[in-house]
Image: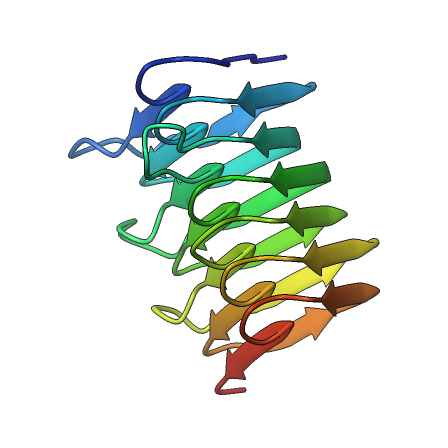
Length: 178
C-alpha cells in the first residue's frame, strides 16, 4: 500500500472495519510512514485479522497526547490474529509507540521503540483469549517513559533477541498465564 501520513492536525490514518457485520481483514503492505501527527500516527480498528508491514511511526502526539500505532481487533466474534512483518520503528511518540489489543495470536518481527514519552515503548495484549504472542528478529526497547516492552497474555509468550535498556520502569514486563 505504501501509506504516508505526516504532519496532520489529528490522526495520520484511521482504518476501521469494526462496524456490525464487518468480517474482512485489514492488510497494509509496502513501506508505511506515519510521523509528526497531532494524535495517533496509525489507528486500526477491526473485527477481522490485521496484517501490517514495514511501519515507521515517530513523533506522533504533537498535540499533547497520542501514540505511534494503535491496533485493536479484540472485539471480533472469534479470535483474530495480528501480524506485523518486516520491521516496526516507533520512536519519540508522546505516549506508547505501538499498542496492540487482540483476543487472537500476536506476532511481530524487528521492533524498535525508543524514547516514547509517558507510556510503554511497545504494549502487546491478548489476554482476552488464549493464543500466544511471538516476537522474533532483533528487537530494541530503550529510553521509554514506562516499560520498554509490556506483554500481557493468557497464552504462551516467545521472545527472541530483545534488548531493553534505560526505560523508566522495567525493560520488559511479561505476564503470561501459560
